[in-house]
Image (cartoon, rainbow, N blue to C red; front, top):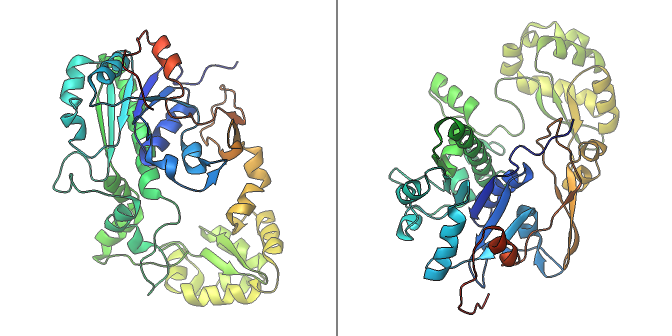
Length: 392
């Protein structure tokens, strides 16, 4: 039996812009919430001006703001503030990613909001959080990747610091914030009161360092970049084939024995220096040389087929174009489209959260035009348009 999406009926006011906040609210929209994007009149979300562009519209903005509605409000204007107050009175969640202190200066700090709207959940996403000595510092993804230790373990030995190729600083903050918001909503069913969710991008980077922190504390040494290989599981790396590279992860002794059979290296599996994972990790370089001497004799595709047939985790290294053509990605519905009236059809990553009793679709509502849903929003919430003329 199909049911409605889990957040259906919830109203989220979205005061966010660029990436971390909009990604968070996009996830909430994907799960059924009604997300109303509050944007600056005449300007809107900064990312509306970010390339690449399709039909004169930002593909960056469109991919992060699908399934949302837009209304332009100036929170320093008294009439617009009255409209915003009317929305707050009926909303379930407010998400913002201003610098700490901005909401307070606008008169919408947590203490004020909680007193006026006790059931409202407020989520704040910032570079360093609402407290601590760095709270007022500006930050972008690159800054927190560097400060949070992620860049120190990314890349290859003796090379300059390398940023992770996707914006993990922003996206992990979005994921943790969405999780925190849903936890606060669940708590509200018990207490009838909303909570403040405070997510720091830097905190989220530290949370990603589970293995790295354990190694640092146990050895007293800061981990360093190791390329693609795992620091404590061997073989778990990229390997050269006759026509490129493949990944192999033989995470236990049984898998390693099977790997050696496929590679015609059965004698290696019984050698003391490779008999256990700990020993293999100590001799990782010599083992890799033995493996690659065999692997360069066939193509990546040939080896992946042989290894998978033996139950060994392996795969090709695909570029983004190849990912878009992967049949598994298609089968899982991980590519969705929206028909934008100006940009035409745009393809975007889908929602990886699949619920067995909630129907899925490959179609999404396109990202809103600036202030494009104003009339419907005001009507739905029983609000009246201010008498002044608007220039948005």
